[in-house]
Amino acid sequence: MRKSAFKGNYVPNKRPYVVVDPDVFVSIQGETSVIACGECRKEVNINDYVTGISTEASVDSSPGSATINLSIPDTDVNNFFVDGQLIIIPMMEVEIFAKGYFLVGGFPQYYRTFWGVVGSVTKSWSGGTTTVQINCKDILRWWELTMVTINPAFLESFGGSAGGYQLWQNQFAAQNPVTIIINLAREAMGDFSLTTGSFTSFQPEKGPEGPAIGAYARDVMAYWQLKFGNIWNNLVIYGSSGQMYTFRGDGDTVSPVAMSREMFAQEEALSGNNQATSNFKIQPGEITPFKQELDRAGDVEFFQTEQQSKLSIANTCKEQSGWEFYCDPSGDIVFKPPFYNLNVLPNKPVSWIQNYEVIDDSITDDEAPVFTHITSS
Figure 1 (cartoon, one colour):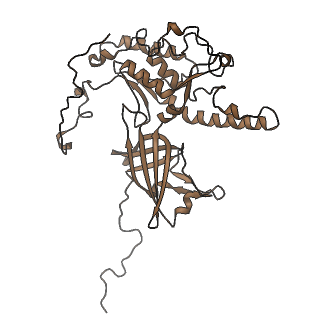
Figure 2: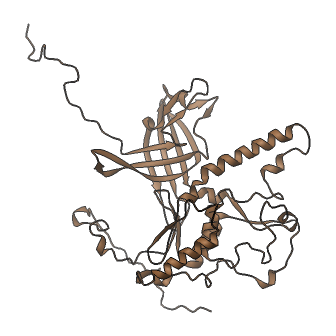
Figure 3: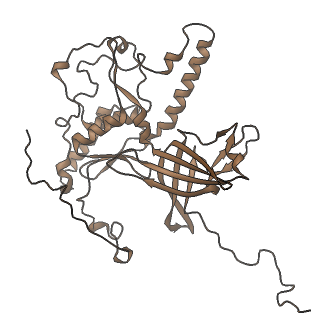
């Protein structure tokens, strides 16, 4: 019998091992695990089943999107369903975090690269594996769904639910883009009109069910307002000087008009610091996305309320000012002038791409964006 050279030298945990941190992980409803059973409170870590993640963001087409692919074997698939319903459903909050390159204190740092909601969920089965594709939209999807009353009906304007009567038929008339963006971000829920679909239209007129259903509607409204009210804390506006302005903590005490005035006063003191974006400087009294229309002044709509989505109003501000409006991958809601002409020389090496980092390159010339003659009136 041959003797092994390693016989008798086994010691538990003696050999070193390498711990590899994940490059990316997903959080749903603020947790990496989802409760799969209401009674036993069993938790399922969805990141154990993630096989692919992709995100897309653009300053031209908000909201951005993300796709998360899960591959679940048949032995575990029952953990993801309760009464035949997948535990991941539309309008759940989704956050995606990616690992940074540098270590801090010997540990990797993770940075949020997407913040949004579940838009749709697709399920398919093949060969003993259930594939789940989660399609997400960034948090501006909420602005796409939330309606704002531009001009309330005359009968509704005195109820206080959608603002008072508007002389110019538009509550944003004569306001500058910064004031409008601040106003939209501060009001997390938008307006729910009494003359259009809202929670109040489902309440019974009389009977014992009235208080219960009314309380349920209020609870649902409060939940969404708390959840998406974080948009206000994530609002970031840049001036043409490059200065960053945030407004968290001032939402209940300072009006949007006063906030924009303070910002413009600071911008006036910083004027000249950034010549590249001086052409995009907003003059509060000159740029107004929604005009005071004299021919509509005093018009009365008794029953019809005019509404528009928050995102469409924000996009109008973007187009009229020539600025950019989008949800940053970190989750910030950004309204700023285009900074493509900024001088990044002082930022070396942070804003520079070094030669050794370039793998390949290609250059394409196109005549589409070239204008040789423009006539305006």
